[in-house]
Image 1 (cartoon, protein in one colour):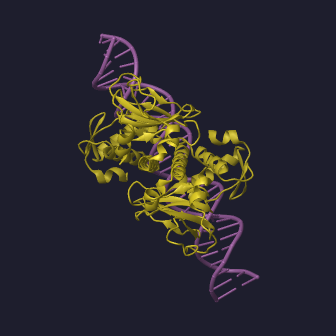
Image 2: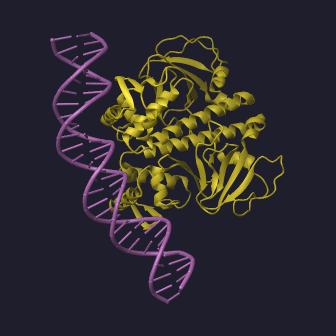
Image 3: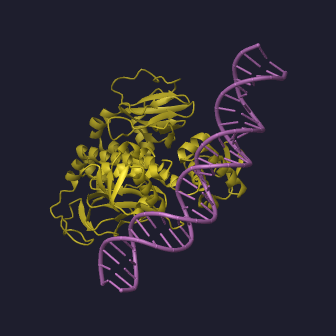
Length: 224
Length: 224
DNA sequence: CGTCCAATTGAACGTGTTCAACCAGGGTGG
DNA sequence: CCACCCTGGTTGAACACGTTCAATTGGACG
């Protein structure tokens, strides 16, 4: 259903590109622009004017906030199909950053969405669906970080990743580092590591590699 | 801007009512229905079919989830002007409950919004705005619960309440109990109480009553 | 081969939870 | 009227958990 929205708006011809440049010279009447980013590159920055909405086509991105004390707090993980960049005010309240080298982002001019696109009801409903999806995503995350123990949080995180990233089930690949997971769950890196060791010791998961997790017992994973 | 949406949809004649009954027999062509709730009454229940979207006209409501271990987790505080009830699937993933006796809720049939209302572009954009507002609300809360110490969380919560509830500034009235705050911030009741004592001791706030907080020093409140 | 970074583990410390007691206010019923 | 209970709020003490600082390992890369 989200893909429906995507194909409506993001079906521009050229998609292959390199290093943070627009894929191809776009005609001015074309709404969506596709850009490829490398790991660590910023898609839109906290405090800047929010001229676009975005969606992830390929790769991985995050949206985060840097607090006054320097701490980074990941608000959400953005996977292919996810939309983001909606802001209450005119400014972005968070920074979006690519997390893998092959990240492809489509951007939609906000004023066009607000003014012109709305004339087409079918597309508008797709926008609503994307917004509701973003809402649910954030809500899921709120429930994950709201768990009591660190093992519960990490366990729920693993289940969330398993659900959101398609692949052989029970055999998941972590898309981000321990440090990112820590900032995502609001706990320290060491605690993330300890929680993974704890889950392994208790037979909930198997760590075949630092980034490779095999879910052994799904029921005991989220319970804590 | 949100009020715009509200007046578009919620301008039905009768508003006065009592105790969880529809305000008046509504003609079938009218989309929005207004209901009054008392404290503790459920507006929509987790797991039930999501036939409506809702908005708060008056009073106070919360949206929460009951976990498998019996813990209650408040997802958000719903104040007049707030919309809620958006669900990814066909079922509500949370329970909404009135928190004060004079809570008035407007409900919008979902299928009508999806099918009929969308023909009017101006109204549709209002729906998008309501969704973005809900999204930002949840994001704000995510940042509050993501804070490190309990005093920071409670301090941020107070600032949030001050911002969202109109009234004489620096002199705020807590709309919910310590227990609710605890479930909202994901900490225990005792910790909430201790945090308030701590903030008082440090001269950030003054507790003129259990529910009456006076903000003395706004800068040191959120810092922790 | 050395450097750098990610990840892990240990130990001490700080903070929040838990269990418990206590207090204040508002009902209710004898 | 007072005793009683119940709810909401506060405070104390012991404990569990997560943080912090520190050290170590392992792999990737020049």
